[in-house]
Length: 301
Image (cartoon, rainbow, N blue to C red; front, top):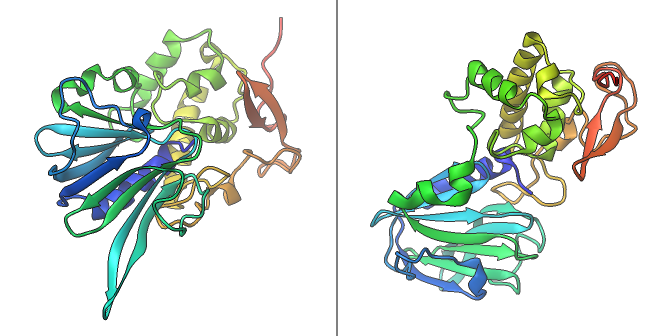
């Protein structure tokens, strides 16, 4: 599933092209993909895009008439934006923005058999929502009701926003003192947007074992984890995110973070700090990568 850097990369691409455009037609081929709230009109035709934002792993397209369209890509969601191109009398389309799951080929004919929603705008550009496994969704809500949307209401703080301070992080860790760090950092109610890749990377950079409990950390370790989380996310954003098998960047290319990853998907390879082979264990059903030398295992009683 795309994590914060990947979804933010997609958001930035859409924010370059969508604001100011008016939706002329909106079609849905799979009803469960589109979930308008009970108190909003189901039709999107005629709505103007105001801006594109993000909360956690959820994209938020602000429309006029005080409406917001939430898009969650989940595991295999994909957004592709194409603009019309005319050469003489020949009309074609150019892929401008693409992000999400890389299968089927981003440059293939659209709509495809996995295209479940299509937006056509007043300048004839189009935005396609594809989803191979159909886990994602589009949800239309009124702005005044955004705080009541379950997934938005339960999100923790955004790790790259100013309000996510070191003090706040320490306070949250102390409240969950008996919880192991790997599942805690994956918990979207604790911090929004983190997933398996960046939790492993942050813990390694901070030199903390994934099975340590939050309450076992020293003040220096809490600070190190806070700083590592921000650094890892910023680095990934700078290089367009991580392309494993479920994500490509806004231009349809691969994010470059995996090439410089510290531990993620590097089982058996040497630690970039000490040379010790990276190990893998399973924590709450998730493959977890760490260095046994840099990230000492917690002592057992």
